[in-house]
Image (cartoon, rainbow, N blue to C red; front, side, top):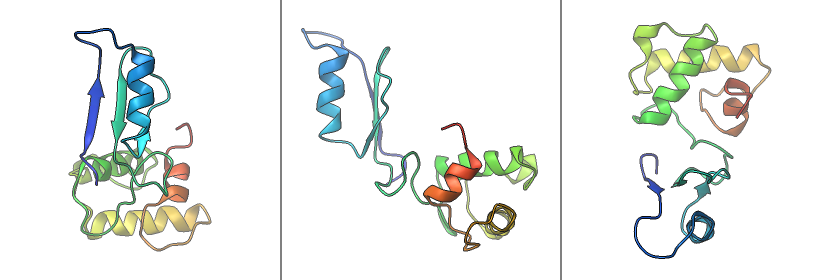
Length: 120
């Protein structure tokens, strides 16, 4: 489901950002709570509060976000960030999970995302 997203702003008519936000809540799995400048909705996995589950074989922007976080935390090199969840990323995720007392399954779900991106 990664890659399905929509950013909305009022263009014509009398709709407000608050009204757009309420409508988006009924259509999208995730809608950003801050709608001060626009409304962002996307199809993130409902089991994860911020990002969809990514795992071996996934290829999308969320994998690149995961890889960037692994790089920032010292588990990957800059050249490993390619948006493709292959062996290098899986091994880095497992090492990160072990180091953070998470189940070392190589799958990035809500607990791993929370550890990778603690401020989100």
